[in-house]
Every structure is written in structure tokens, then in C-alpha cells.
Length: 135
Image 1 (cartoon, rainbow, N blue to C red):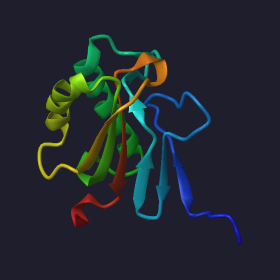
Image 2: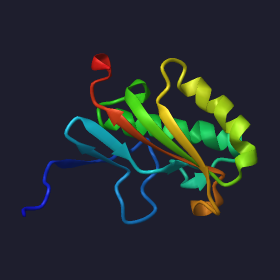
Image 3: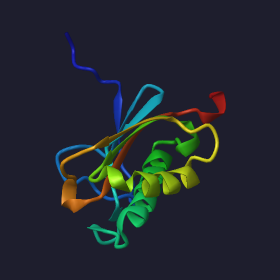
Image 4: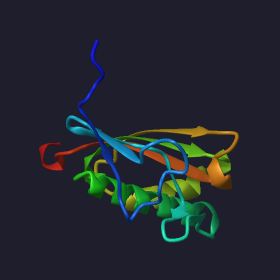
């Protein structure tokens, strides 16, 4: 069996670089799969100050830039997974999330985890379609 060659690595100067051996996103046919984003300021590579709300806002801004680099956008997101260090932060995360997904929000799972990279409060990954007009 030959290896799958139908994938394209996505990168963006506006989003944080991967902090490990992975791509920030992969395009496979008409879908984009993002790596989990944490609230890193891409200019300094450190978490933004301000806790769960500031981190959630930065995470979704980072995801926006990753998706734009792939030729997609938040309107084309069909599924997200949210990882929270503390489920008590759910309401605050949800309030910021709602600012970014105002109409027809994607399907979503939210889970509590024991820890996240760099001590982050939240991490979000997404799957998006390349053609938001067709959705």
C-alpha cells in the first residue's frame, strides 16, 4: 500500500509555531484539521496574561489565522474540541467562544484534562471545510 500523499502542511506567520514535532494544520482534500491551539502570543511565544478569557480569545484568534492560511475561516468550522484545565472555567470560556461563533456554531466537545502545554488554561482544535459558501 502506498503512503497517503493527499495532504498539505499549513503554516502561518500570524499564528504560533508548533512547540513539538507536529504541523499547526493539515489540509486533506477539502478539509482542514488544526492542531490544538493554546493562548500563545505568536510574537513572543508565551501565554497571554489574563487567565481563561484572555487565553480563549487568543486561542480563537490563533485558530482564525491558521484557518485563513489554509484558505478557510471560522464560518467553515464543522467541529471543535475544547480542552479545559479546570471545568469551572467553562462558563467564561463559553462566553468568549460565543463571540467568535455567532451563527450556526460548529459541533463541539469539551473535556477537562489534567494539564495542558505551558500551563495553559484552554486548548482548542478544529476541523473546517475549505468552502464555507457551500455549507
